[in-house]
Image (cartoon, rainbow, N blue to C red; front, top):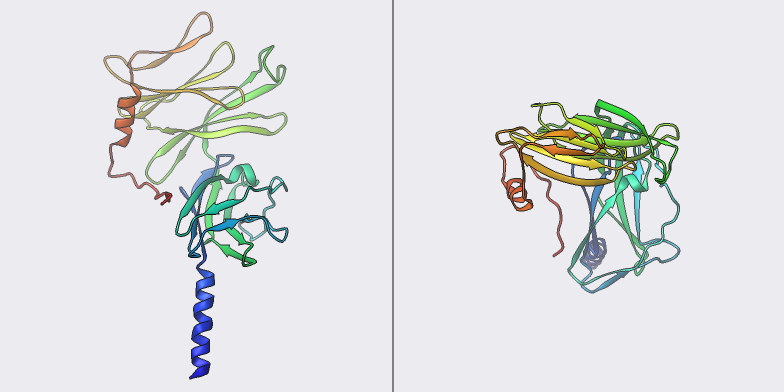
Length: 291
């Protein structure tokens, strides 16, 4: 009887210790294209029954990630600098943070990756782990590409940039992507989605006198998305146009400027209301929120 009671008490102590810090890691989707930001949401819940301070202890940073490839091989981080500020979490509270895995680990090669987060609680000299998440990196279908020089007077003058437009089919939609790279050096400055695209019309792409890229594509029936991208991949402008009696088109002026002609510019309020309208095909990922 005493042995059974001792075992039960030990079990309760272990269970209590295991539950002191709850860690979860979530990815918005399973598939990403090469060099696209792989955004993860880290959630940490304090179940210790008291405020906790997460900090470096015993030479161990309080937060870390473990990334492995499809063959189980560990993926080393891009930098060894793991300096982290302490984090205080009140009793019963939950905190979340967005993490760009692409900026921390070389996960641009095609294949499957596994990622797990861990928290080191120095007070107990103990690690707490999230579940392992899986994501796949693939490449999109190129539909347009142009290499341009950087104008004189601009940073990097004399070198070149290659703009690419790509499309990728997901289970419920197709997305249009832009990539900006220096093919001579192998540097990819940016790869990101410009939003949903439908096969109503081919995207338009024009370069202005500063060699900035202007893109106009059909995002939904009678709705067009306009984007302006800089030489280092910056998204410099973004807006939406509705087709009225005329269809929006990119216009290249004699002085080298590029503008949208036709259609009607959507106001931010109208665009926000349209984007909030639910669709039967939408299956949004649940993002954890602070309590």
